[in-house]
Amino acid sequence: MSEWLSWILVDHADQVEIAVRLCVAAIAGMAVGLNRDIHNKPIGMRTLGLVALGSATVILSGSVYEGLHFGQDAVSRVVQGILTGLGFLGAGAIIRGKDGSEVHGLTTAATVWIAASLGVTAGLGAWFITVAGTVMTLIVLTFGKPLEAKLTRLFSGRPKTVQDEDG
Image (cartoon, rainbow, N blue to C red; front, side, top):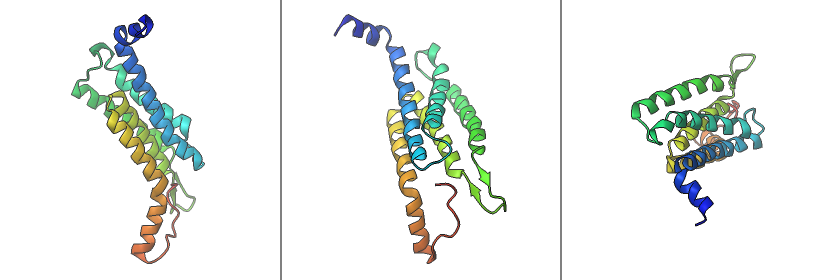
C-alpha cells in the first residue's frame, strides 16, 4: 500500500468514513429523484440528493467529536428535527385542486420524506437499511401506480376514476 493511501485510510479513517456516508446519502437521494425526473415531477434528482445529503450532514455533525459514535438520545432528537423540518418542505409540494376535491403532490412530498430518511440511515452508517430502503422506494415508485390501478379494478370491479395523487 502506498504511503499516500495508507495516510488517508489509517490517519484519516474518520474523514474517509464521513465522506463515504455523505456520498452514499447523496446517491440514494439522487436515485429516488431520478425516478421523479423521469416522470416529470417538480422535485427531482438534485433536490432529493440535497435533502438526503443535508440529512446525513446534520446527523454526522453531531458525531464528529465523538469519533462517529452516536448517543441514542442525541440521534433521536436530530432525526425528529430533520423529519419535522422536512414535513414543511413536503407540505409545499402538496396542491389542492380548484374545486377542493383533488389533491396533488402527495407522492412528491413522500419522496422528500424518504430521501431525508435515507440520508439519516446513510449518515448513521446503516448501509443495509440505506440500500434496501432505496431499492424499495424505487420499486414502489416504479410499480406502485400500475399495481394500484390493477388492484382497484380487481377489487372494486371498476376502473379507478380519481387521478392518483401525483404518482
